Image (cartoon, rainbow, N blue to C red; front, side):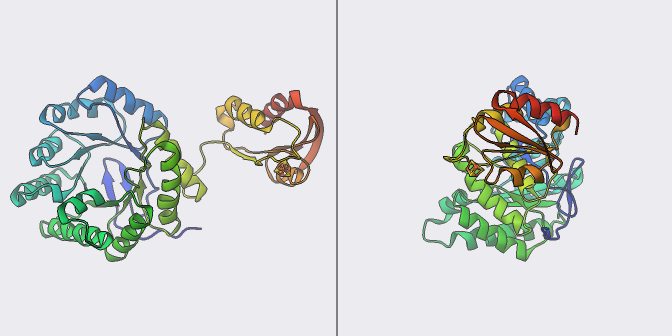
Length: 349
Ligand code: SF4
């Protein structure tokens, strides 16, 4: 069992981040935020997928004015993502967002930055200090120890906020380089007790991003580091949520909301269309049976063992399969009947 790092807890509206709170999965819309209808629709889709916190980009003053309307029409906490514009951050807080994400390095006027912090404190909302490697590099040139600079810069921002009596801070330190990201999070985790938002920035297309995130986010979580996460992809955000949950479930940090299907990779011994069977079972599985463990195995080499361990399983033979339920072999079925027989039997569990 993973022993999570102890952090202080902050609240994003009613969602806890850090402390003993479960790890919330978040995402970010890719609509133009000032298209309120499209943004709200996408947030509702993400809510249905169990997104727990949603962030929207706030690039200009017209957009910031849409935030209160979006907030009214959604059911999960709303975070405003702001770069450069002090006034955007101030107005976003006034519009009632539940958290803001800023990179203080992009906000050069100290008095204005302090105004943001004081206002967030008055309204009782947290701030994510989100430092990305790109901003550090562009401000300091290439001949720097990126990890050390990211961490030291972030801790300096934290100290500044603390000097104003503000501690509702979440930290993120994202780089597109997985190892640098992990080093940065490990280092900051040792030096403060603020909750950490995990992510690999600019991770690429879904295929690439899932692998980078599984290693980076999953690796940190397996060490007990990390209190909320976003898997970011180039493309629509829906798949990000599924990927985030899959990482948490694989580490035992969240209950599975999906059936666990154990299937073998197949090899030259397999004499049934295993992929088709797996996909059909997954597609047709009744939603109330999603916590069942199902084994779909290609042959009798490893098949019976896995099938007996699962709630229900099938081990393929030559055009047939042997059905196992709760550890007992119960019958032999033809390949064409496998999917329907499995689904019928699953209903009885
Ligand atoms: S269970 Fe059988 S078919 Fe599947 S990978 Fe193992 S040996 Fe090959």
